[in-house]
Amino acid sequence: MASKPVTAGYTIFRDLEVTPAEGGSKLIQPGGIVLPFVGAAVLNIGDAVYISADLTVNKSTVATDHQKRVGIVVGGDLTGMEAGTALAQWGTRPANSLTAGVGPNVLVLFLGVSYVVCDAAIGAGVGIAPSTTVAGRVRPATALAVAAGAVAVTSVAANGTSDITGDGMTRVLGILLEAASAPGDVRLAMIGLN
Image 1 (cartoon, one colour):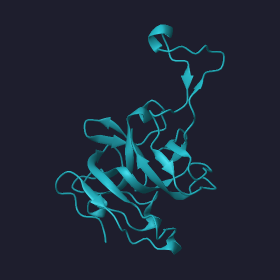
Image 2 (tube, helix red, strand yellow):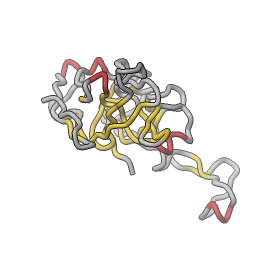
Image 3 (cartoon, one colour):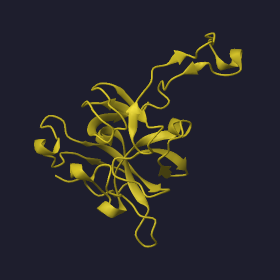
């Protein structure tokens, strides 16, 4: 069953036709809750995106942009506002166009299971965050830690600046469900924003 077109501002897509030969699993298939946004640029199916302006998303390698992360592009105007179903589309097929008359809109999954494009080897069960080297891809999330040479304090107000490094919950998109062995691997991830 393909996704349902967006009519009321959101949709649930499930039971996509992804065979085990394409990397799919009979137990877990992509699906979840999506919202339509305007793409600030041409975005590919599988891109990790953030809110760049009112109801607008984009991809970026800038860590501060990732604090506004919203989810994964799963479709758009170029897919008839339906979620992409072929594994080969993820990371390579544009979901929208900025050409007049075509449409800049994209569907962004913010809760559920989606394929993502990895920028490095990532183990199964590892938290993922937007990449700081390849826009739209994901990388392993880093654990919170006290910065080298810093003294831990209980609040920014007490210290004036933050001496905490790492992604914490401000940049994490979800958890990788399948191990990736190389940059460019397309793997299933559970997406859920806090």
